[in-house]
Image 1 (spheres, rainbow, N blue to C red):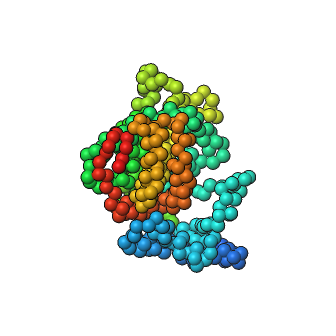
Image 2: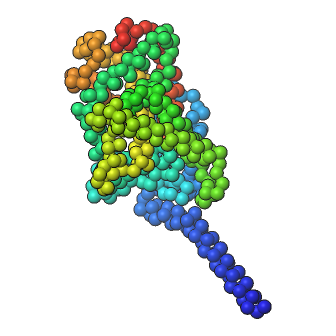
Image 3: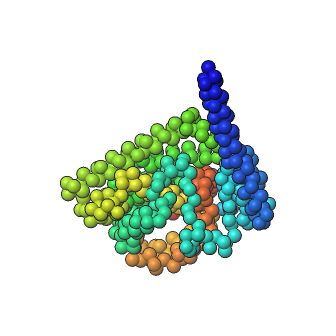
Length: 421
């Protein structure tokens, strides 16, 4: 009995010590470490909103975003205070560089141009890529965007080979085909408003499908739609944090939907890869490596183990180009239309230049360098592009959609297949 009692005391002591260790670890991670980092940063002149237990500043950020989106928006391209209200507000309070908190993760926000240049130069890898949030990996995977070191260099080489200057020239006919399909569709909208953001989404999706994967938008439609839905789920829930560890045992409805859609997207991409592989093996493809998917397949079957890529890597790279390749271009095209609708003088000047150079013929890549005014306009767009390409693209898209509706863009008629008046 005494031995049994000693065993019970030993076991109870062990459980007590284990519980104490867990409590200490939780306190360290959720409170002591963040407050210490905050104190050290403030002592070095880097201020910011105070850390809040577990959530950091996520509740404040979400509240500010929701409040900003509730207000009607005037016709203006000054959208920064709307899509990133927390940054716009906090740089006025704490300075151009400040510290904010995503849960227990400290985030140094840098808006000072010279420091940004130094970070982007990144000589000696002094600024490594940040760890991609697990939820965001559902969208972009572990491909070119998030990879580092030799893996990044290998994947970058593949991308450069698929999209270097000469390859892009060869893709121009496919791009023209996509634009012609869009213009043909617009004829049915004569005298009506056009939802430009949606139109450009279809256009960029079709171009990417044709040039990178060797098929049209209809074949990749399910993949695009699922990735868009993934982005919506992530955007709506990225600032809604739960107590660490709970998600491993209890999943919310959004997390369950996220996993289901991600699984379906992966299966669709695998089917697309298998179909391309069958065509290459049966000789229905020219095996010239003319599109990105063919290059990925060749790398997957590379005889050199060090150069070979896995099927999961292929899937992740396809996700990167389907989503990350489409979203920025789509947003920028929508931004261009907004600015041209506001600045009709630029609209007329650019139209005259294009008609003078190409007439009513399809444009050709060799003559693009002659579009001087278009080049000037592109330089002016850089400031707008930076605002469109915010870290939270979904909010940027909402702002762009609202602005495009406000402009009341009407296309009275199409004089030819290649001219919009």
